[in-house]
Length: 66
Image (cartoon, rainbow, N blue to C red; front, side, top):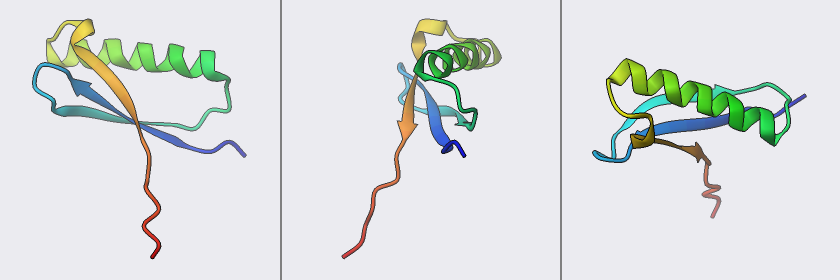
């Protein structure tokens, strides 16, 4: 079973997260990047901003065990 990865799409001009996306397909890194680029384009269009203004980051949970 493929692990789910979570991403947030951020407007670089404001620093605001404007979209969250979960990736569960078991594709390779190239497939993941293509999927993220497609989502980035959709997010830019929906928010009326230039595609180059949007970037994504993987959301990684930190282990806070003491």
